[in-house]
Image 1 (spheres, helix red, strand yellow):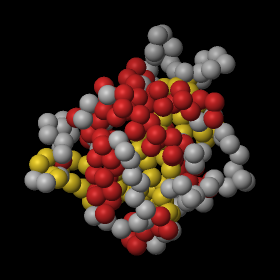
Image 2 (cartoon, one colour):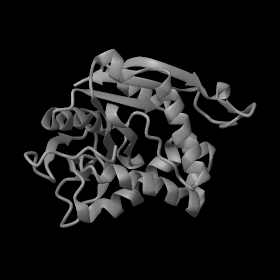
Image 3 (tube, helix red, strand yellow):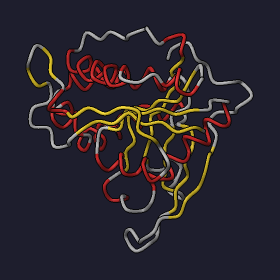
Image 4 (cartoon, helix red, strand yellow):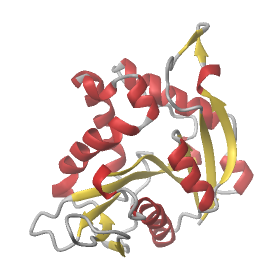
Length: 241
């Protein structure tokens, strides 16, 4: 992840697509601008993810990550490493003033074959627990071998603000990932989808399943890591760009 750099030939920040919602919000059908996150809005994006993503993502909810400042900082640090690659995308509410509101986001990054055996270590136990689980799920398949690639786009957070859900914005954010991939020359995306909503969205968009694990079956030292989790399973899925 840390070694990949966005090509200088691809300007930043770049607008990838625009979209119009499906129903009125406060009496008006909203429109959205989906683009790279500008450097001066990165902290706003992390705040958005903390406020919206952490409340809905099954693993984070199960571990109460958003309720613990120390644990939350561990995940913010990890997201920050991905933001450094400068390909994370954000959905702004269009015509919303000088600092438009963030209403959706997809934090994405590049994972390379050269870094396949590099495991990031965190002092924060909860962040490490989540990332270890994702590493385990990814170990059940080998996208590099299956698709014959040296790198792929990964993602650790697709989120839409509650009041803008049902507008098709999640689908547009997912499409923007492919816009980015084509621009920077990456031909595959692979993601561990942890919630049924995102799994359904990805399936409809043509992603194929590589591996899955039921949360109740994932144990460390004989104990369930995510007891009481509200989702059934996590699925590793991929699609060519």
